[in-house]
Length: 323
Image (cartoon, rainbow, N blue to C red; front, side, top):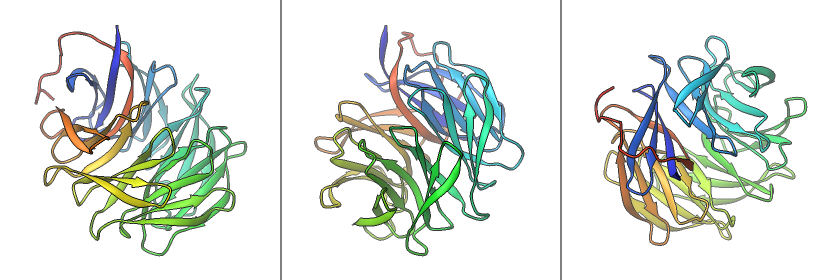
């Protein structure tokens, strides 16, 4: 039987865990190599495989979800520092942002081989990536350069740049369903900016409270609201896109330090990984209230999280603190 699930990458534990959403219980664990430091994740369209960027191992791992086993590895090269990944609509290529190497690499899934590279300027410090619905362009948030770069996939070339104000430090980003706008969370400026893709121009800004530290964000299926995790403020905020205004806030416990967020297909619940509290929390969107919590284990440090349909294996096999 298939059920609604989450998969979360645990940075310190070097694992990926499957969480059953109905009771927010950890069901199964995929163990990666020691000091892999998994960070970002993405799912294929059939929810058969998960792809994980492993920062310290300089790899992208392919996990078969039916048995939570690593079945493929793309070696990127030393000192690449892969952070986050995204996948195209045909499950043909995975794209990974390499924070240290200042590159974006295209990985052919059939062979888990790097087949293309986009070079960014040294010191750009790329941190976020998303792909448009036509599989034509990638968009990359460059933290140190204060830019969002547009990469043409056909030749992996940078063809456009949106300049964000100095010291904004863009972190995560997401794209709307019509490929009209990209939204970028600016960590230091405490803002979320709307970038028009036709000319890579900032067209609107949502101002968050000082010292919120927004990092990752996601968009609902109607392109009506954004949800952004504020690392320093320990909140998740709902932003109405029509006027780029914060309209609701989910308060998390102090020192949770939310990092990654994702939303279910019905726009009913949002899920947030909390780095310091070692939890993944379920937030009901109608009233922005925390309605469930999965504890992933002491010192696990959860980061990337993805939503999909997975196998229900019955009795949980994970033992808290066993890694």
